[in-house]
Image: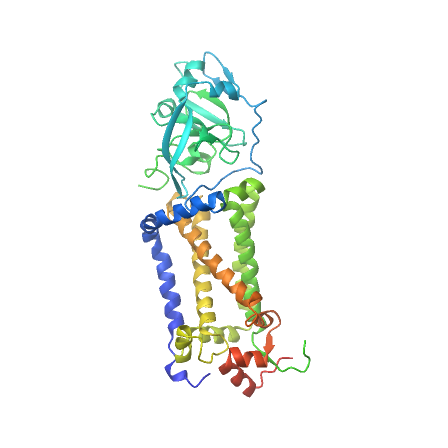
Length: 229
Length: 209
């Protein structure tokens, strides 16, 4: 269509296929590349706060609205196979022995948040109050967000870096992060860490949790479950 | 509007339909995607399952609508457009270095934008299907998928802002919007921005109604 038809080159198709190949092969190089760029992107996300969570959190919920925490009515119930059923207010929960940790949060969908500062209660202190019966083998965690629940074996709940967290990065948990309390188990993917916790039920066998019912692994070890590793 | 000012026909109905199906889907997908992705918006809006359904179904409608437009539309004009996008002549190549040489109906930048949009659409669709299906079958769950979907969003957002600026705001180029809404542009504008095409179109009598 022009006087330059003779030296027209089919660069468009090549560019299309080249870029498509680059995009498809990024399944192989996206992760290393994102590590290279991490110093840049994490500074960027620190600047932009949670408005632009590049490399940061994203908030997954399963119901129409996030639960609202009301300190006056909220209770943490510990029930099931226990000698002493327990009902704790928010203040009572916060008055239990406090632990702090810095750990990395892994989501099963592939994103990760490094160096999250948590504060909360180790499960040994909560279990000491309720005194599980010998037949108890696992804890079912029930969220205010219905019908979300998940579970850990007693042994898993007593791992050194597992806690019921009520503070994150130096402040009480926000609504989006599961206020007033959420389970933290850094060695497993985040879906095991029930948010907006309201009840711990001691049971003799691990029940099928919300995501397990949809095909996710009961033991959600990071890098060794859900089709990885 | 100047009734007597000569016009040239620039984009066919089918080309415009493809553009607007794509644009509408992009906007809905961007809006719902951001609501799913940004913590502040997620908390403000809630209703994640609904937003997720809208996002997924919009993607389905987008693909089906594109297929329908291609099936029912003027495929000859689409093929001609593809050929045009494919070929970069000397003027195109030089234009990318300095904005001098006369351009065809699509300048080199517009060709590149078209190519990028096509690649991104495909990669968005592939990673999107993997995200959706990976939630149902672990064999299709890859740690990288969401990362790639995210980066496609960042880059295409920047492209979209640039595209919007040139077609709606920039005084010298924004007349091009008429081409993609009504199909025609003023001939004097075309002669300035797409000289080779304007000459040819005049010769072939591509007057716009």
